[in-house]
Image 1 (tube, one colour):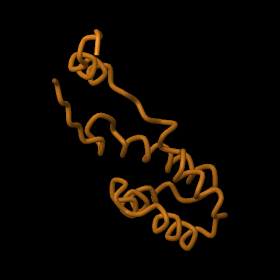
Image 2 (cartoon, helix red, strand yellow; image 1 turned 90 degrees about the vertical axis):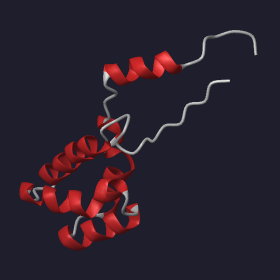
Image 3 (cartoon, helix red, strand yellow; image 1 turned 45 degrees about the vertical axis):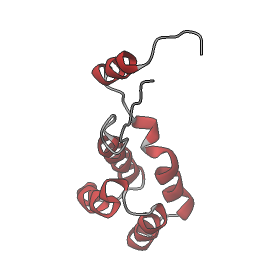
Length: 101
């Protein structure tokens, strides 16, 4: 039996890049300072800060509707995730061959 253990925190995908792109689009869409992207990435801490804390910090700093912040935190980064072809190839290579169970 083959066993594969993987860590999905910025290992197989660049979650930070996806969130950075989504956060930048959020700031632009709400007329907020582009320079705040560094602040927002720091608050996010590579996804380790609980979403509720990130959302509260954003609402407190910007006064934007909580629903807009929630939409960013729930789906914004996921819409921008890219699986690099080399990673997809490596995952395919470790998949066991199809056959009888």
